[in-house]
Length: 288
Image 1 (cartoon, one colour):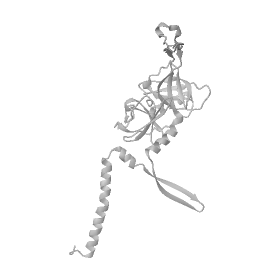
Image 2 (cartoon, helix red, strand yellow):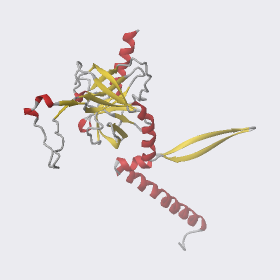
Image 3 (cartoon, helix red, strand yellow):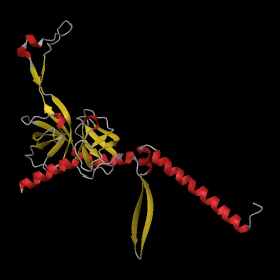
Image 4 (cartoon, one colour):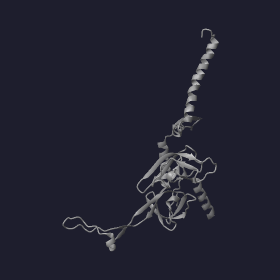
């Protein structure tokens, strides 16, 4: 240092300052590239929003940062999809045996065996819950997974917002991956169709899967963990980390904006919503 003149000392100081300021940035970017998708998604949810305020005589542009959390996104998604959620139900009367009245002496009542007392068999209403679906048209079209194996010759009940409507199968097939039911809408009820987004899903994308039964609503958070390399979207293009159960099979897969991007299948399978949108478009065209 004693052999350096003032100019060289200044340049050396600037060089050291530059290196020490750039190094942390390089290390941070390298770590982000090597980190799991969940971490980078959380970091990337800091979104820049421009807010324009107009006041007399001047316009103010203010940049603000809003932290979007998974909890907040899920809450908004639930609000958007709740009016469109449906539960597919089959009326199935249940045969029950009749219990004789309690004896006067207080001994244990006797259950009449069904096989020996056919005349005493009674049928009480029962409901067999089959799966979840969601409304796709204001007239009452409901879509669900074809894995429910719904029978075109059987009338089902569709429960929406705790009200039940009779419905029949319009189209179904394992090749399409989904089944469409039409509500017998004799009262002219206007249903709330779920909002769609046909933008292709992408690897690492955060998703929400919503399910329900007659007693509760369920929600699951996951990511798209498998995406085909082909540019053409097919029924086998995507897989998710969602654990499927009897409440969410046939339920909607939502993006972070609360729009439906697919139908949830068993084992993390997905029917991209573009196929349902194509069916609706062809149905509308055939009516003209």
